[in-house]
Amino acid sequence: MRRCAAAFAACLPLLAHGAWTAGEHNRDAARSDAHGAEHFGAQLVLTPDEMRFLQAWRMASTPLQLPATATVKRGSSVTAMLVFQGCARDATGRCDVVAELALEGPDGGYIPAGSMSLWSAESMPGRLHLGNGSMQVSFDPHDRTGRYKVIATVRDRVSGQSLVLSSGLQVLE
Image (cartoon, rainbow, N blue to C red; front, side, top):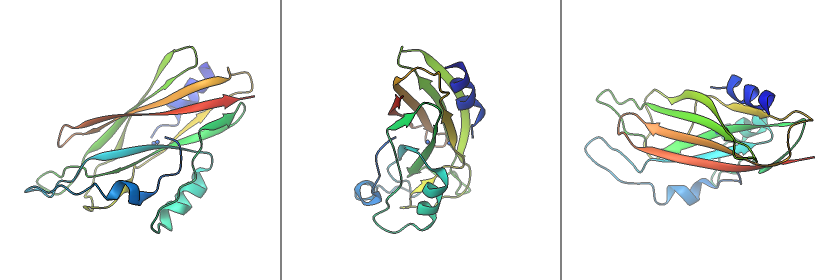
């Protein structure tokens, strides 16, 4: 578990499980104000294949189908990704979204994994954004099997809104 935590923390800079169809989340995503703010939302995705995930993201068609998982075998890893939308823009049109990450083990132990910047740039209203970075969660052959949880607290520093996301991960033999 210590090595798992070290790999978890060392692979920062990004992050639920299940395939996410973008259409499910876009239909409720439009609230406007003077700065063009939308509904702030995020999804934590655990993927078994980061390269395939990125390829699917680049080829984005609607509905968006991303490779995701809720299980991993000891001796393997998954990559945590964050997809978000609706960040508030400052006076220059830039968003500032950050995340704090942690791993909870089957014994309830909580391992803080650090923080990262997800987005510090202009955003496109009405569009999903893939956070800038990824986080690999690796399990050694001797790590404990059972139910783990990846936790991300995503914060829009312009609006002050925060979201706490979690994704269960079953570690198998």
